[in-house]
Length: 349
Image (cartoon, rainbow, N blue to C red):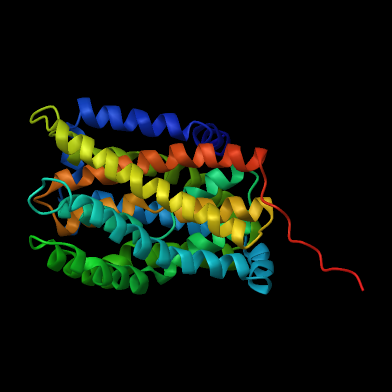
């Protein structure tokens, strides 16, 4: 029953995300309440809803790792290594280009606020939801799972590195904020919220007997999918809750434009890399999706933790989260119709 419910929700995930956005726009109250920390009286513990939901999603991702198939991936690691290199290289190529364009706008800080949000998106690990699109597109699931897992476990190192490297592009104090956010990602936030849940799920997939693992899947998978939707709603409430109260159409349009530019450039560079490497169609699909799909939920949680007084910075993050799913749908359809060329066999003697 739980598995059928999870399968039903996975096939309607795009529409469910749009519904979560509409609820955040017209009914933000519960989401704003969930965004606040809550004290649990019996144990005097402080509950932070968004990081808890993010941890649940990443635990589920680790739990679903096909451990046996990952062995084959490690024996032929070209796509995995290419994906990890591109995960670092694409932000270094895309963000300076976007920064140059934003400096030509009349914004007093050269669009540093919007650029800060985009940097925090592209510096995040590959989104666990990318595995759903890989499955829909008949992609190479072990390669995608390997990229999600490797980028997540390496994120306490790669995220601060990218944030510190790109910080000089910002003005108005945003550069220092980005460096401080990198330290937060490297410290307790990255370890407790990102790495440990994913590692715990991976450990469960490795050591639990098959019968126990199936039972855990039946419970955790529907909870994680529901949790990801709640997380989308909670994050969106912080940004969209103020849109009706204080409409800022220019900010909204700028956030959408910047998010669309970064998203499309990331997917395009991933597609070009897959073509240059002459990967098989399934692997090419997985690599392209991994380049364009970053964990926008993690960046939203990080923005909430490091910049609680600037909820408007969540607007480009939310726009990116929606756009990357739309782009993923089109990429999957196109790659299935127009597969990447197979490697050319060596000439005979």
